[in-house]
Structures are given as structure tokens and as C-alpha cells.
Length: 176
Image (tube, rainbow, N blue to C red):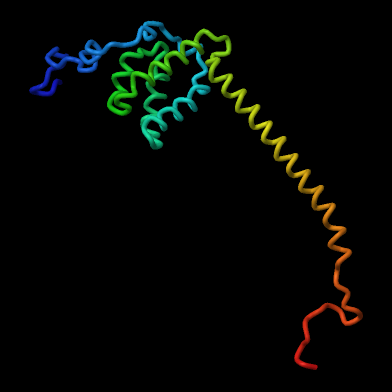
């Protein structure tokens, strides 16, 4: 039984505002290329998305980050134009540049055999290299510190006070 006063089908009086807004915007030509999300390792791109959104907003916002994740993970072939319009309320003026960069990463990942954007792969390899170099520097510092301590300890033993047979030196006592 239908509810009185409502139409059981869409009457068409209420248009989709997002589609109207899409028609007014000029999107980059890169958005014409389709992405198959099954070919992309999206978990490899997630840290970049989070970092980029946090830097654009100026604070951490897990709601917006998870919205972006869900918009891309929900469809096999996501529509960059509709996603851009949906994100404009959150990221505002930087939305178009963010989506353009993200879409180029996704195209790169889609064309890559590994499913990971080459730029992000290179960045990860460089971070790994930097961590390795820093570990080596820390190890060298530690070894130098140990070497210095080993050279100093014999000198400390030579200048140890000898208090004779009385035991440890405690001062003059109570005047005895």
C-alpha cells in the first residue's frame, strides 16, 4: 500500500544538482581516461591521499579521508567528475588540483603491472634509503661513543682517591 500524498516513482521535478554543477565546471582532459580499480592497489595510494588532504585542510580530518576512500572503493570504474563535485564542499578551491594529481596517480597505477604509481614507488624507495642511511649514521655515532667511553674509563681509574684503611671518604664526621 502506498503512502498517501507521495509519488511511488520519481516525478522528475527535482533535478540532480550535482549533474547541473558538473556541466558548469571545466574539468581537465585527464579525467576522460577510465580507471579500473581492480588493477590498482588502492592501499598503496591511501597514505598519499591522507597526507595530501591533511596538508590541504591544515588539520587531520578522518571523515573526509574516509569519504575519498569510499568514493573510489565503491565502484570499479569511478567517475572523477562526480567525485570532484562531491569533494568540493570539503576541500573547496584545492579540489580540482587534488583530483587531477590523484587521477594521474591512478592512471599510472592502472598502467603499471604492480598496480602502484611509479612516483609513489620511487618516493617509498627513497624514504627506505634515507632510513637505512640514518640507521648507519646512528650506528656509527654509537660505535664512536663506545670507543670514546672505553678510552676514558682507564683514565678515571688512575685518579681514584685512596682513603686508606678507613673505608669510604665521608667527610670529617661529628668532630671526633
